[in-house]
Length: 391
Ligand SMILES: Cc1ncc(COP(=O)(O)O)c(C=O)c1O
Image 1: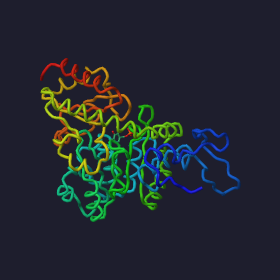
Image 2: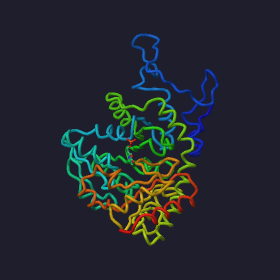
Image 3: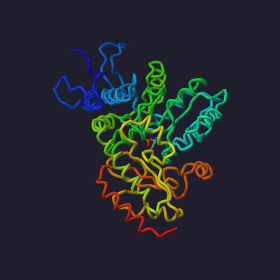
Image 4: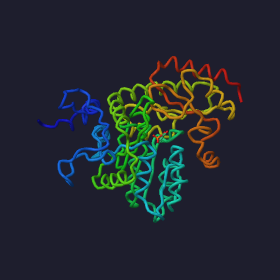
């Protein structure tokens, strides 16, 4: 039978690529393979699967679907997003230098500064929305540029294609944490990036019930190097998580589009509120990165937004603790809306000076917008802002 999958639309691929029915039973949903090891026909004769760290059918199904959605040649699924990012940094050697975006996820900041530094890898954080600053940060030892767009928690927008071109001119590999954008809104491999990373814990899973990560690449040789590292170090995604992640992918497009629509409406609502000093959402024309976002994000600007109160740390904390529908929790990307204070939560692992230097203030609140009705979410925010005393 001819393979039409390359011509299929995003949603069709999300449902069908890699998700073949079970030839033994006819089950429409591929079974969950929990076996750790697989029988060989002869000693030393390797079949597609031999041991679950090296490959597992349920993990493979998820990887195949995701690779198709990101327009990659292959994907690798990990035990967490951090394990996926760590795998990329393990391509580096002592003495190498990394340039990373200034408002990256706090855990990535910690990995680069507290773990990679032990291996003699140097890190420079830079505002990657400014190409001149990015270029100035290069040294002859720069081997990796690590981007995040939208950035975390300020929703900074990096011109991915321009950064990839610059990095390649300087001989560096380009990776991007595309957790916020998802392949629904941005496909970085098509913009020249070498490796796309996801915390599958977030939108790919989409229901706050799994921990996982993934890397997707367009180059077969890079895939082999990353696969070797993953297999040698072992932080693979478990089969149950892979099963849930595959299920998440099937509704990814519907969720992300709808959540992005609600986020845009909430961003406008907060921007019109006098108690709010600033709103950071790339869908607002007032956002510094709006033009680039409109160019590289398709059909929405994401479901993450942050806003700053004129008040102090205590007032911000109280607003975060007063919402009823927005639950106070780190993480993001699921059907339920979450609220958090980056200074004390997602970005607590930043040095305070670094945090403030990069604009992550004590008054900042980050929202992950879920699938609830927008009017209920507006009312929830309004009541929390009213309940908190002015700073
Ligand atoms: C943008 C981003 N990247 C990476 C991670 C790390 O992912 P995980 O928690 O799955 O290790 C997170 C987690 O919150 C995140 O928000």
